[in-house]
Image 1: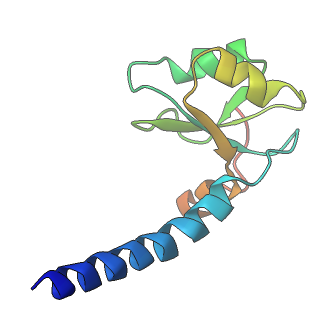
Image 2 (image 1 turned 30 degrees about the vertical axis):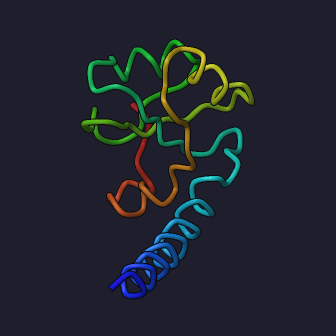
Length: 107
């Protein structure tokens, strides 16, 4: 029985690695100035105010539960968002494509 549990644990660990690696590759891409970013923050956060305080504009839908798309030409935009309380600032192009907002106009 112990050998079966060890085998299942090894398979589960392998599956976790196979699932996490592609996600980390997508999430860890650097954010380019002027590109869409996905701002992830607390649901109690005022996303529009957060993005504006960091020097950017909200793009597309007003607010989602934990994230919003934003854009700014300022190279320090992502750092400022993090300093103002964003949990993460990720490349937003995939999210925009999935939501049909790739060509969305800024507000």
